[in-house]
Length: 278
Image (cartoon, rainbow, N blue to C red; front, side, top):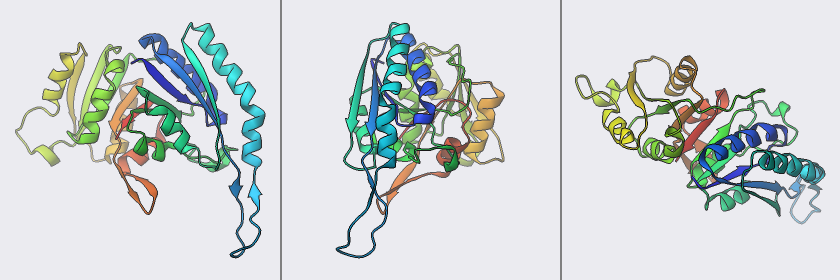
């Protein structure tokens, strides 16, 4: 892993994502790009065709006012840890800043973003990026939770596995981080529904492949009546995992990004960093 793009678009959570980016970069010797988009004004009301269109620039002003403060936090932390870094600030033409994050992240090994607030009332920015970035970037996306006092560790990692294209991408996209862990759990929720009984241990072949990369891995079939997303969250919590890795299922419908049930559940209930690939 040589290049990480860290999105600083969630102003309420920049310290968490900066700290975790610095931690990962220090372990992988990666170059970190701090990306700070300034959203353009949004259309507030459109009364009738040809009418004056009022523009709402309140969010734009918030980002302009906090730009130097965020830059100072980012640069101070990178310098303190001796990390190679650069700052990229971009003024957007619209209020949608997803394209900027995706465009700058596509040449990177990893995109790191903050968790969207499930409760919009907690955020003064009202920007929700996760689904669009995860499904559009073509790069692995590591989502950092909004929990206070996040501990930066990668000693134990849980990898959700079901032999799908998305899960395969996630497993191999996360290899640089898996190699850092002392313990990796390759976990398939309710494998009997797919494999049937009496077949090989779920994930055994992938476990062998990861072991050839010097990953210390254990393959486990998890029989659980819970939904897959809830089961993975609970298993990662029970194992005291520092990171959850999983594939992100989704599709586009009427130009809106839609995430699959397990992915959406995990993003809304996450209490630890999650790496997702699509």
